[in-house]
Length: 275
Image (cartoon, rainbow, N blue to C red; front, side):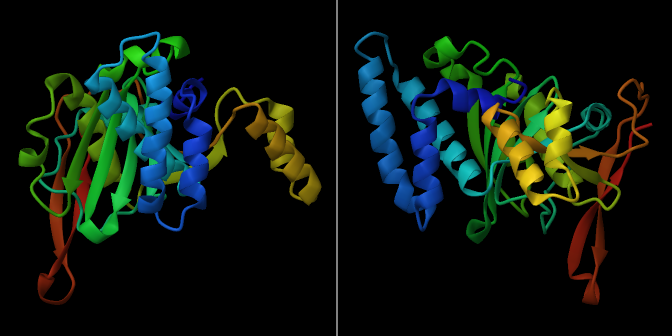
């Protein structure tokens, strides 16, 4: 499976139940207590055979919360294309996130090719983002999920606000992925970014054609149903057409803050691409 969020769904015995709890609840907080009970029962069952440490419990609760919010808000996957990832790897982080974000959903999964990805949950009332980072190898062996608690990192990032002190405590091995995620979130505010909704690579072409049939609703429904049952996801691909994954950059890109509005009271980020 291409996306870590799909591997999570396939490997965790509670994934289906947790998604149901969050989708059906009036508020996520109402589902949280029941979610914890479900996971507690499953981990107690697993502990009869395997050692289940406190770190595993903490990691699985964080993942389940992020997964539940992801399901509640439509299971949106955003995929940064290779050229964009390469350019962002050569872009310094902004000192702050934008004052106003432009997210595809209040909770979604952001895929970073070659690096892993992150569950992103927007807490608008707190003006904060809960980021649950997962590495590239997350749950590739579905039978070993109990032993990968060190493959998860969760943090809360407030905006606007200085980023550096908020991410300073994150372990070095997560910094590259975290930078890609934060730069990717900033990039979503840029007018030049193109987003294309399409089925993930590897989806059978006949089914994809059915799902996109312009003239027949039943054909579209049949195509979508076949794709979803087979485990394929519809993905929002994010790209800037002129960026090339093979491009070698000699200078770093950066973000500059541009004031606008009455008395310059508002500001936005403008990306200056690496060269």
